[in-house]
Image (cartoon, rainbow, N blue to C red):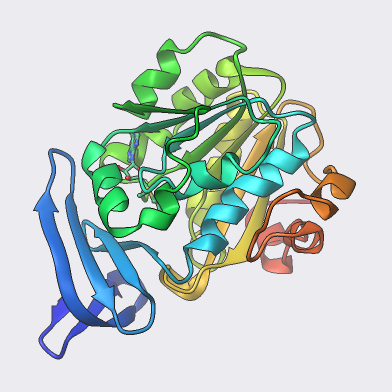
Length: 287
Ligand code: SAM
């Protein structure tokens, strides 16, 4: 029931008894890649919309929330991020945020499905506006395999900007993948993963992300919730992990004086996102 005849796109969350709809002007593109079904719509109020396998990926209007919160907390927690790798993230929005940090010398986007990036270039040009940056590198292939082949101790920050943990992304939510991330990170390195909805997934996906990251050797794990209106429940999360480096301290002064524009992220938003809601403390067995 994704395409209502009345001109609304609806994503139904079957197990939750809820749905999210956007009034559409027209369908701009519909194509099946080797990996997934990609649809692009123009909407009445949220700009262009990308849908993969029936799930909302992003809209022009509110993607900044997700992309900024997937990027800046991790990069301002790391002491000096120079090499950053985005796994997934084919729409290039996370890569764009990474490249805003002048200290980043090399950034990679490792996306399994090249069609996602081609669609983003065509229908979300703003997200791709830094793709010509000489520090930007693109690899189209499986991020799980890429991470198992990478030079050990060579990356400062890994950002897993994946689809939900099904299909090609399933293995991105797994101990073996996290172990390879641990090996790939330099001393002081940080891993961050999109970890779904705090309200829906604290007891399930977020909890197993914490457990699996710890099994892989990350002794610090912290989940930061943030608003994301177009995702199930309108509330999403990024989970950061590190070996030893405390994740509740960050370069607050640098965040305060960031030499670039954001729409959501700032020092106080970062500080606030570190607070753990009471139900999550229970669900995640924290203190
Ligand atoms: N913000 C989105 C969300 O949370 O729904 C995610 C956006 S981004 C489009 C997700 C990307 O992850 C997709 O383009 C998908 O092709 C990519 N992806 C899924 N599994 C992957 C894998 N194993 N390796 C690399 N990229 C993968």
